[in-house]
Amino acid sequence: MKIIDFVKKNYEIFVVNFIALGFIVFTLLAQFGVHIKVDEGVELVPVEIGYSRSTSHINSKFVLVSERYVRLKYENNAQKSFWVPTSVVFGRAGVDDIEDMIKDGDSIKRNVFFNTKFNKVIGVTKSGKSILSLYYYNSKMFRYGIWILFLCDLFVGFLVKSKNKKECK
Image (cartoon, rainbow, N blue to C red; front, top):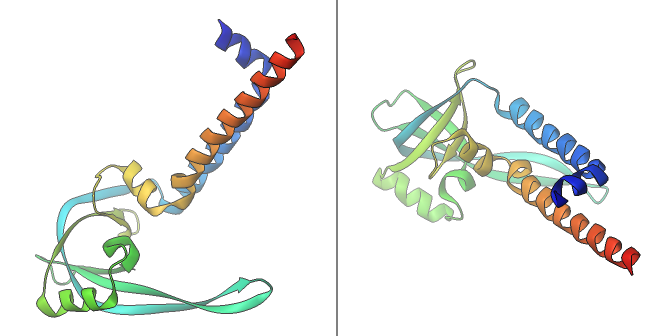
C-alpha cells in the first residue's frame, strides 16, 4: 500500500520516466528499424582495414576525426562482405593485431544483425543473439540511458523520502 500511495503522490516522476523510455525506444527503432534478422555464430574473416575521416565541431573549432573500419566477409560466402568499425568487432585491439589476422586469414565468430528490408548490416556482437544485445552493444543511448534513468529515480526517491521525514518532525 505504501508503494501505491507513493505513486499517487509523485506521479510526475512516473510521467517523466514514461516519456524518457518512450524517447529511448523511438530512437532505437529509428536507428535500427524493425525488420531485424540475426545470423548467429557466423565465421567472419577480416579482409582489409580502412579509415573514415570526418570533421567534428569541438569547442567552436572544427577538428578532423578519423575512425578505423574493417571489412569482414563471411568465411563460406566470399561475395558477402561489409564494413564495420573495428572497435565493435575487435574491441581495443591494435592495428598490428588486426593486420596479422588479415595476413594469416584467421576467422572470428560473431553474431551479425542486418535489416531485411534494406539488406544492410546494422550491427555485430561478440555474444548475445537477441535484439536487446544489439541495442546494448551498438547504442550508447540504450546502454547508458537506462542506467542514468534508474539512478536518477533512486536519487529523486531518496530526496522525496528525506523531505517527507523532515516534514513529519
